[in-house]
Length: 153
Image (cartoon, rainbow, N blue to C red; front, side, top):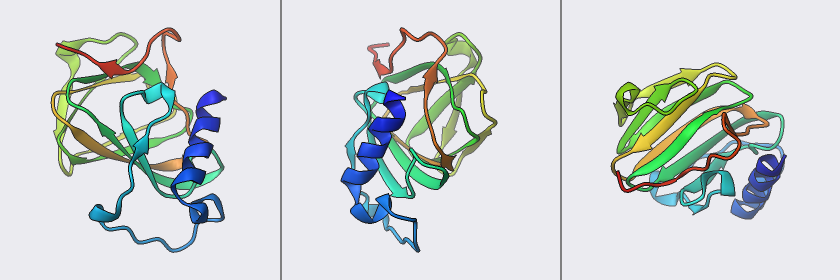
Protein backbone atom coordinates (compact mmCIF):
# COMPACT_ATOMS: atom_id res chain seq x y z
CA UNK A 1 0.00 0.00 0.00
CA UNK A 2 2.88 2.41 0.78
CA UNK A 3 4.24 1.88 -2.74
CA UNK A 4 0.90 2.70 -4.38
CA UNK A 5 0.50 5.82 -2.23
CA UNK A 6 4.04 6.95 -3.07
CA UNK A 7 3.34 6.48 -6.78
CA UNK A 8 0.10 8.46 -6.49
CA UNK A 9 1.96 11.32 -4.81
CA UNK A 10 4.63 11.12 -7.50
CA UNK A 11 2.05 11.29 -10.31
CA UNK A 12 0.44 14.33 -8.69
CA UNK A 13 3.76 16.09 -8.22
CA UNK A 14 4.89 15.51 -11.79
CA UNK A 15 1.90 17.04 -13.48
CA UNK A 16 -1.55 18.05 -12.24
CA UNK A 17 -2.95 17.06 -15.64
CA UNK A 18 -1.77 13.46 -15.17
CA UNK A 19 -3.76 13.15 -11.94
CA UNK A 20 -6.96 13.61 -13.96
CA UNK A 21 -8.35 11.27 -16.59
CA UNK A 22 -5.51 10.65 -19.05
CA UNK A 23 -5.88 12.59 -22.27
CA UNK A 24 -3.92 12.87 -25.49
CA UNK A 25 -0.27 13.17 -24.43
CA UNK A 26 2.90 13.88 -26.42
CA UNK A 27 6.34 13.96 -24.79
CA UNK A 28 9.76 14.43 -26.41
CA UNK A 29 12.77 12.83 -24.71
CA UNK A 30 14.18 16.23 -23.70
CA UNK A 31 10.86 17.12 -22.01
CA UNK A 32 10.95 14.21 -19.55
CA UNK A 33 10.93 15.54 -15.98
CA UNK A 34 12.72 13.26 -13.52
CA UNK A 35 11.85 12.95 -9.83
CA UNK A 36 13.30 10.78 -7.07
CA UNK A 37 11.77 7.31 -7.14
CA UNK A 38 9.64 6.03 -4.27
CA UNK A 39 11.57 4.32 -1.44
CA UNK A 40 11.07 0.88 -3.01
CA UNK A 41 13.50 2.04 -5.75
CA UNK A 42 15.59 4.44 -3.65
CA UNK A 43 18.44 5.97 -5.63
CA UNK A 44 16.64 5.68 -8.98
CA UNK A 45 14.57 8.37 -10.70
CA UNK A 46 11.13 8.13 -12.31
CA UNK A 47 8.96 10.07 -14.68
CA UNK A 48 5.27 9.30 -15.21
CA UNK A 49 4.60 10.17 -18.84
CA UNK A 50 0.96 9.11 -19.06
CA UNK A 51 -1.74 8.05 -16.62
CA UNK A 52 -1.43 7.31 -12.93
CA UNK A 53 0.36 4.13 -11.72
CA UNK A 54 -1.67 4.08 -8.49
CA UNK A 55 -5.06 3.93 -10.23
CA UNK A 56 -6.90 1.57 -12.56
CA UNK A 57 -6.01 2.22 -16.17
CA UNK A 58 -3.13 2.40 -18.59
CA UNK A 59 0.03 4.30 -17.67
CA UNK A 60 3.54 4.81 -19.03
CA UNK A 61 6.46 5.43 -16.69
CA UNK A 62 10.20 5.72 -17.19
CA UNK A 63 12.76 4.66 -14.62
CA UNK A 64 16.36 5.86 -14.68
CA UNK A 65 18.71 3.52 -12.84
CA UNK A 66 22.23 4.66 -11.91
CA UNK A 67 25.25 2.54 -12.84
CA UNK A 68 25.78 -0.55 -10.66
CA UNK A 69 22.18 -0.59 -9.44
CA UNK A 70 20.65 -3.82 -8.22
CA UNK A 71 16.96 -4.66 -7.80
CA UNK A 72 16.52 -7.91 -5.83
CA UNK A 73 13.97 -10.57 -6.87
CA UNK A 74 10.49 -9.11 -6.99
CA UNK A 75 7.08 -9.37 -8.64
CA UNK A 76 4.37 -7.02 -9.89
CA UNK A 77 0.59 -7.51 -9.52
CA UNK A 78 -0.09 -6.62 -13.17
CA UNK A 79 1.41 -7.42 -16.57
CA UNK A 80 4.56 -5.42 -17.20
CA UNK A 81 6.01 -4.46 -20.57
CA UNK A 82 9.52 -3.03 -20.31
CA UNK A 83 11.24 -1.25 -23.21
CA UNK A 84 14.89 -0.30 -22.85
CA UNK A 85 15.39 3.35 -23.81
CA UNK A 86 19.14 3.63 -23.14
CA UNK A 87 21.96 1.79 -21.42
CA UNK A 88 21.93 -1.93 -20.69
CA UNK A 89 19.15 -3.55 -18.66
CA UNK A 90 20.29 -6.90 -17.24
CA UNK A 91 17.40 -9.08 -16.07
CA UNK A 92 17.09 -12.61 -14.74
CA UNK A 93 14.12 -14.72 -13.69
CA UNK A 94 13.65 -16.50 -10.38
CA UNK A 95 13.27 -16.18 -6.62
CA UNK A 96 17.01 -15.78 -5.96
CA UNK A 97 19.42 -13.22 -7.39
CA UNK A 98 21.82 -15.15 -9.63
CA UNK A 99 24.33 -13.07 -11.58
CA UNK A 100 24.88 -15.96 -14.04
CA UNK A 101 21.21 -15.80 -15.10
CA UNK A 102 21.27 -12.10 -16.03
CA UNK A 103 20.61 -11.44 -19.71
CA UNK A 104 21.43 -8.01 -21.18
CA UNK A 105 18.92 -5.96 -23.17
CA UNK A 106 19.97 -2.74 -24.87
CA UNK A 107 18.12 0.22 -26.43
CA UNK A 108 15.03 -1.02 -28.22
CA UNK A 109 14.94 -4.33 -26.31
CA UNK A 110 11.61 -5.46 -24.90
CA UNK A 111 10.64 -7.70 -21.98
CA UNK A 112 6.98 -8.65 -21.33
CA UNK A 113 6.07 -10.41 -18.09
CA UNK A 114 2.78 -11.68 -16.68
CA UNK A 115 1.64 -10.76 -13.16
CA UNK A 116 3.59 -12.51 -10.41
CA UNK A 117 6.68 -13.40 -12.48
CA UNK A 118 9.71 -13.33 -10.19
CA UNK A 119 12.65 -11.41 -11.64
CA UNK A 120 15.71 -9.37 -10.67
CA UNK A 121 17.73 -6.60 -12.30
CA UNK A 122 21.25 -5.19 -12.34
CA UNK A 123 22.74 -2.31 -14.32
CA UNK A 124 26.39 -1.72 -15.16
CA UNK A 125 25.83 1.78 -16.54
CA UNK A 126 23.10 4.41 -16.24
CA UNK A 127 20.04 2.81 -17.82
CA UNK A 128 16.58 4.11 -18.69
CA UNK A 129 13.61 1.82 -19.15
CA UNK A 130 9.99 2.52 -19.98
CA UNK A 131 7.19 0.55 -18.36
CA UNK A 132 3.86 0.37 -20.19
CA UNK A 133 1.09 -1.34 -18.28
CA UNK A 134 -2.01 -0.75 -16.23
CA UNK A 135 -2.45 0.28 -12.66
CA UNK A 136 -2.50 -0.09 -9.85
CA UNK A 137 1.20 -0.94 -10.08
CA UNK A 138 3.43 -2.12 -7.27
CA UNK A 139 6.83 -3.71 -6.76
CA UNK A 140 6.81 -6.52 -4.18
CA UNK A 141 10.12 -7.99 -3.09
CA UNK A 142 10.24 -11.79 -2.75
CA UNK A 143 12.14 -11.20 0.50
CA UNK A 144 10.37 -8.27 2.21
CA UNK A 145 13.67 -7.24 3.85
CA UNK A 146 15.36 -6.66 0.48
CA UNK A 147 15.88 -3.23 -1.04
CA UNK A 148 17.13 -1.86 -4.34
CA UNK A 149 20.52 -0.16 -4.15
CA UNK A 150 23.75 0.81 -5.85
CA UNK A 151 26.32 -1.97 -5.37
CA UNK A 152 30.09 -1.93 -5.80
CA UNK A 153 30.26 -5.24 -7.71
